[in-house]
Length: 248
Length: 372
Image (cartoon, rainbow over all chains, first blue to last red; front, side):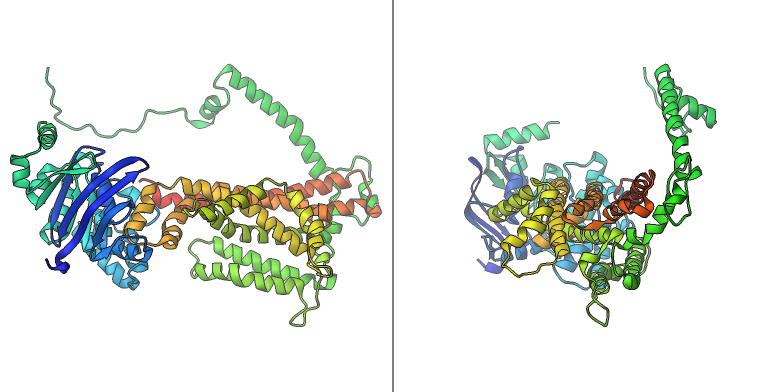
């Protein structure tokens, strides 16, 4: 297989929180342009898994290679990986003391060393893409949840990442705002972005994902194309989970 | 039963409250029997305290005179003539008379820098701040000590009065602030050595009274230094005060750091910001904003604690006033009271200004971040 087509390669990943075995023998390969949805009950380790990919969580065993860089204790390389991997959080995590525009230009200026004017221009174009350019001079606290999450996506995109990680991006949004965020994510998927999304939005998974991964108790229980995954789940735990979330 | 709204309700103002002076009085001062009693009691206390105070400080006060006789008049109040006569000493201590213009110049430059910095829309504010932090101290040092550029040297043993108070307080503030930030970061560091060292430093300094620190600095330190090393006493005190208050500052800053949600660190890391970038650009601006009241509280405490340098033989503002109580030419029953009243007034004006400025700063910094 061509090395260059690999975005993320995880082999034999194990992680513990103290004595708690949070991730068990995870193997996962993500090619460039793959769109993967990870679902599962709470506490199943899905957030922990994607947080290992940019080393917000440190793993104890196994290999994680992102963009050809193995994650180990070399801090310099970790910052390199983080610059190429964008992340969107459940709780947005915008910087409340900076304006929307400053939120977006901060990392390009300080990490990418872009000139201010260029960072500014790029930020405005991404803000326009998530349809929030008119709010550029406001502060995060003045925006609705859906708007804040769209800004968070734009902020991550401003680093021109190779890979985007979404950690339950719509879970803390009001129902009326979920769609505006999902629309942005669908557009992004259409442009060929490599995406890993932890989400319970099954409609999104059906339309966007190439693969759906179901996790339970820190392990991957089932992995399949969305059509198969939803229509013909194999593992009893998957069937139970799907019947729970699709029945209402 | 079913209901469908045909038109939306429009906003209406809240029902009228008690308006006018009488409404306010009834609502706030006489709303109940116990409140009425408290109001009357408060008014009684004010009545017993305020008029005599005004009488003493203003109406019966002696404003002019060249000696004690002026203030020895029957029924005389505050002896402001004493303050007027000794004003120079209160401000400059025993600083060489002919060189006092240098202190004035340093004061003026300092006041101008601080004043310009407080104007929010000042163009080039950043450069003024850099000037204030890096260049001004050098200029002030050269002006005050002399011994170069043709300025005669004025030994620090001659410094005193408000000059000394400002020197000790401002050096303490300017040094302890960054040092406190570094210590606070150290105390929260992942690295055990950094953490342990910071904790030891903070707890050691906080566990010792400032008086002890000052005694150590001025009396004991010379015992440990090689014989013959002459290490300026004021400098030793400055170092002691700065290190002492940095421990307090560290704890205040740590309080702010603890209030920052983990998500802020994670978002900064996820964007590829390194430790120092994340702390300087994301964490500190938020943490410091949260603890402005605590920081200013520490500054005010430090400012007032400078009076303790008296016990190691330095005469700060209060010390310079007290020394003059023993001047036979001004020995009157009112001298000490007037001197203390004057000291209290000056300290209060300075500390209250700091407090007001911090409140304004807080309000301004919160403008944007508050939810609209």
